[in-house]
Length: 283
Image (cartoon, rainbow, N blue to C red):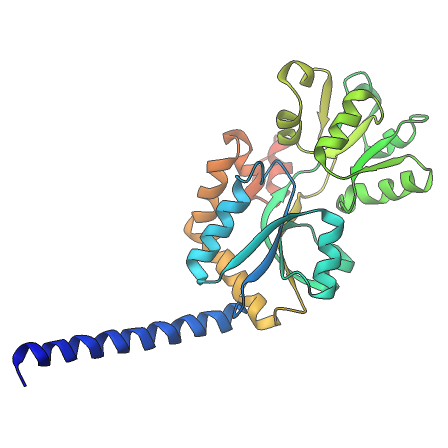
């Protein structure tokens, strides 16, 4: 056997072993993260993280795929439909979901960001509102929301009361509810500064006020992993991965890419420190 033949066989054996090792490593990662099959993932329509196929969420998914080797099948879905999908197993994961008691029964929650939900009202109403309950006292004032949206513990109780009074109007998406605010069909929305800035022309924004009424921490948002798809140990691996991204600075880098500089810290912190600094206290 010639030297070239011997070297060729060594090379071929090396390729075979590398392929076997690579396949074994891929299978191990797939078992660890629960992605032996492509992950059916729902993107939620929210201009803060997703707009026209771009934004923080698509970049986050790309980073998760790079680190895990998992394959994602993302699709834009209405909020109300996603919760049914998590419950019945037709959907594996949701980005930027907000957990409540019912959703925690259906899915594991992996926090990524923190939203400081705020009340957006016409400028003329703003002086009357110091707390969200003040809005409830304004006769006939209608509140607009997106179907399937959960507002967090500070707002949700009063929203339920407004529902019972027939003063809540539901819309399929942000565009529709901001159009209702502009037309006067509703007098308040729970959203964020970024929503207002992206949904309304600059000259119209002056007609509205963004009121930060919540005295508590910001609302944690993140990945929701269906309990029908993922096991508790697999959810723990996703949590470990996101915490690694938080510690190595890659999560902050993604936020810096997509958020206004003055709001980056707000999206990365729970809100306890935010409230201290807001009051001019020391940490």
